[in-house]
Length: 292
Image 1: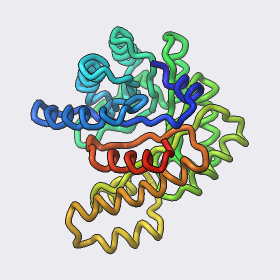
Image 2 (image 1 turned 60 degrees about the horizontal axis):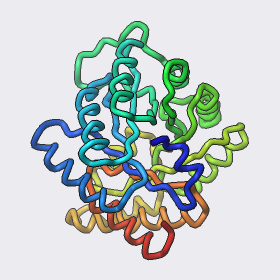
Image 3 (image 1 turned 135 degrees about the vertical axis):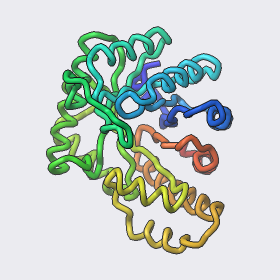
Image 4 (image 1 turned 90 degrees about the vertical axis):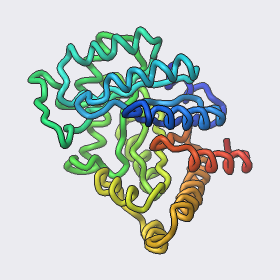
């Protein structure tokens, strides 16, 4: 399954889900139950993350193996190259190739936290360099990340888009963006990318509010702005139970998705956080309105 072909050839929006690998046998049971629940929605594809510094490489591989095998789900595999040497990257990619994976989503990744870690001296400093390295050696379709509000380490949004153009020129064929809570930010970003000569599909990432704490923490880590509307909602939910918070998150994300689809995006990529209820309810509502 080559993801870029889905975006080019589908006559309807492409729906995809992102997962991260379970950490142990106990969490695996819950994880694959979630996968089964979301599989009922018939996603066009799913993706599996790859931990910082290769910290989940074995777990990611095992999860991809099961998703493509037992679960029969079209799957794209992440590769996060920070700290890894060329040989470690090729070892991981060779294993994915043996599984029949055809699409690799390439990110530089972050330095592992809370563990002792020494990066390989030949580790790639930039995602574009890793994309070029992979493209010269494999026949994978490659995807890359875009940042509508600019990468948290970027000098500016304009400079970040220059780096994105390098990723495309190096061989990436589609872009999935980091989530943002204001669609205007996404639309402005796409316009700037097009003006910079980037013509590949640009797909918005969707992150529903799952908990108030998680939303604030991830926004800080990712550099995502919390809009006034969202902040007012979070303030109202300060003492709310988990069900109320989920319902608010579903309503907010549904409104975002509806607007994005009516404006003609090629697809929606859901950051599921290995949970099923929010994504399921959002997509069922969108189906009722014949938007997907």
